[in-house]
Length: 120
Image 1 (tube, rainbow, N blue to C red):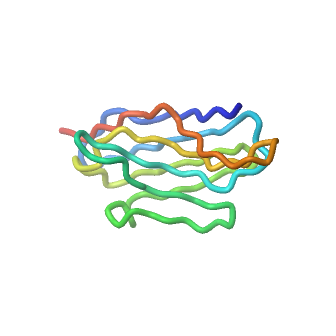
Image 2 (cartoon, rainbow, N blue to C red):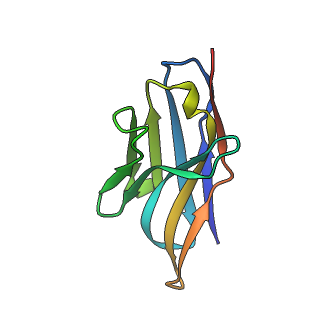
């Protein structure tokens, strides 16, 4: 089994900052990628940022230049630093880990989500 645990999130004023953390643990042979998606009210889940084991990182156009995704390989942890937050960033943020398990199967594992609300 693989667990994906998120932390961070909360309420912040426009222009403020937040940091989300996500750790994957359990029966992990290799992590192909980790990153964050978000789902606003009435919207589909969308990619925010994803970092691959090569180090390549993809950002949504809407967050590029404001959000930074980093990782600690030793801890199987990624951090999403969110700056200059806007009301439209309000959403539930989900962490995803693309994992090769000890049985060498590949699965995507998701966290339970953490609420980010940007409001004055």
